[in-house]
Amino acid sequence: MQSQEIKTYRINEPPVRLDKFLARELPSFSRSYIQKLIDLDTVLVNGQKAKASLKITTGDTVIVTILPPTEKTLLSEPIPLSIVYDDADIIVVDKPAGMTVYPAPGHSGQTLINALLAYYPPIAKIGNPNRPGIVHRLDKDTSGLLVVAKNDDAQQNLIGQFKARCVTKVYLALVKGRITALRGIIEAPIGRDPYNRKRMAIAEKGKEARTEYRVSEYYGNYTLLEVVLKTGRTHQIRVHLSAIGYPVIGDSTYGGKSTFLKRQFLHAHKLGLKLPSTGTYKEFESGLPADLQHILNSIKGCNPGSARQG
Image 1 (tube, helix red, strand yellow):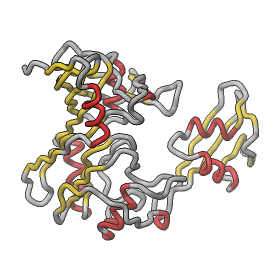
Image 2 (cartoon, rainbow, N blue to C red; image 1 turned 45 degrees about the vertical axis):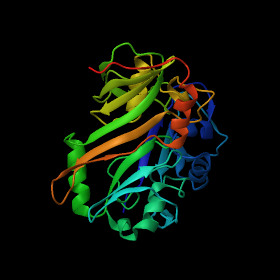
Image 3 (cartoon, rainbow, N blue to C red; image 1 turned 180 degrees about the vertical axis):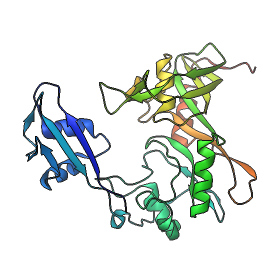
C-alpha cells in the first residue's frame, strides 16, 4: 500500500489564506480535496491545527500530510474505449481529449483507469494500486496513443523500454506562426516554474529534455508539426515550442490561447515499441480526431502551403 506523502513549506511571502496557498502549491488536487485535508487536521501551521481561512506569512511553517487514494476509489466504469491493439501483455488505447489517465485525490472517476478496470478487471493487480498498468501518461487535453501493461512482467519490460528511450513517440501539433526551419531540435532542461506551480518552464537545474520536429504543412500563419519526443518531461512539447516562440494552438497555459479551439492542438500520433513477450517491434498510428481535423479544414483556405521535404 502506498505510504502517505508529507510536504513541508517554509513561507516567505506576504500574508495569504491557507487554502489559497495550498491550492497554488498543490495544483493537481481539487479545492474540495484540500479542504478535506484541512478538515481532517492533516495540515499543520507551526505545529498547530489550522482553519482554511488562516492567514499565513513569512516565517510560518506549513506541513501537509497528503492521504493517498485508496484502492476502493478506483471504480470500474463502463466508459467506451478506442482499443487499437490488445494481446496477452499490453493494451494500446487511443485516448480522447478531456480524459485524465488515472484518478487523483478529489478526482476519482471518469478516468482512463476507471474505463480499463471495466474493460479488463485483472489490471487492478498490476503495479501501483493507484495507477495499475500505467507506464506513461498523456495530459488530460492531449489525445492519442497510450500503452498499458496487462501483467507485471510486461509492465517492467515497458518501463525499461521507456527508460532506455527505445519507444517511438510522435505527435502532431499545430503552432502559431510559420516556422522557417523545416527541421529542428530543441534541447533545454525543464523544471517546475518557480513563479507558477501549475506550469513547467525552461530551468537551468531542470531535467534534460530533447524535442525534435519536422514541418508537415503550413496553414496561413500556422504550422503543422510532426514532433518526436526523445525524453518524456511533463508538458515537454508545449514548453519547448513556446520557448522558441511557436506555442501550441489552444494551449492557454503556454501562450497559445485560441478563440476557435478549447484544448491544445496536440495529438499522440504514433507509438512504436517492442512487444514484451516476443521482442518484435510494432508501431501503432492514430489519425487526427474530429475536433482537430475540423480546425485544419476550417483554416485550409488561409493560404495553406505544403512544406518541402528534406
